[in-house]
Image (tube, rainbow, N blue to C red):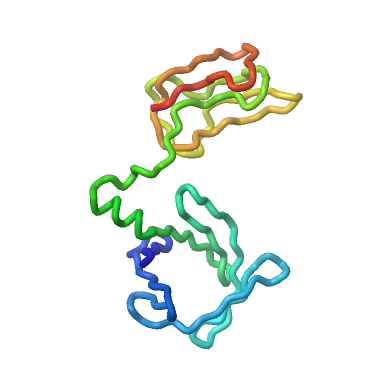
Length: 165
């Protein structure tokens, strides 16, 4: 059984097998991918077109557009539900402790400071590499533990730039 939450509202359950049910009600539906990259869905006699806008496999979320409405769907698989019931919900979460330089470059700006709480997607540093400015963003919610570089300093590939906790 999968739990799905749409736009942060109350979760509902999806059961798969011979038949598919939603909140223990059998759902008659079918879907196919159409050439434009969207999906044609027929559910309970109604036709819908869904466009997948974003898939975040780590966060287990999918952002869809259906009839000019945007929906963010969060999915909880059985293992996620078991871990939550055991009180270790984030045990499988990917922990990131360091932000490293993916290539040699020059640090232009450091946008955070030690002790600062940051959220996933927040910009933390600007690195110039191959004549392009690259903005590094946090891959997770964290607190900046240490900054290992200063603006104007050249860095090598793999060098630790910022340590997160």
